[in-house]
Length: 234
Image 1 (spheres, rainbow, N blue to C red):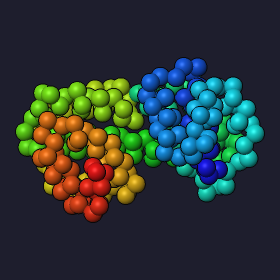
Image 2 (image 1 turned 90 degrees about the vertical axis):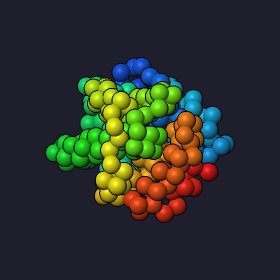
Image 3 (image 1 turned 30 degrees about the vertical axis):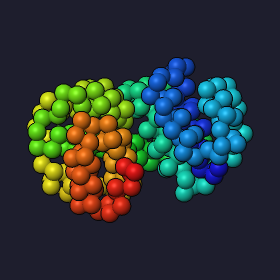
Image 4 (image 1 turned 180 degrees about the horizontal axis):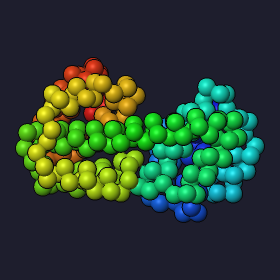
């Protein structure tokens, strides 16, 4: 495991524990990081660590600071964790500020980053919701049997409860134009584009019209510059 991954896990864990309560979405995100990044031999140790605030704080105190080039990545991942339950609390912000202060990040710089991250999260959430509706419904309204899939996805978006409610209402509205959506996706940074497709991919496999949804998923992905996007569905 790289030092950056360890820092992301520890910082994200501290944010999740900031209000002394882990909710389901926070646990799911921490588990996803562990699943993707932690070697099998260390898996159980990290599961125990992220569930124990005192152990996390001890690990945090013992860690050497990451290189300056990794400061933004670590802080952004921690900031994302703060939104997975739909609400960023004052206690979570305090933890983020304390980590940034330890890194030597200027408070003005942190505020600038936070504004940029929040804007990017809002765009990501919107594109995920729009893309899911287009894939699942084509040019029609969303199938009734696909509503629960869609709303489960909306509940996991890194945005506020109010924004989730607004995006959830897209289930009952005509989808956006697929060509316009593809252009909007193409304009996003590649890492954000891939996030959109990774979040929507599980819905495609379980959709009522799975084959048509798969075709739309791949076509839009290729138009958006992701040539091998079909691999996400294999």
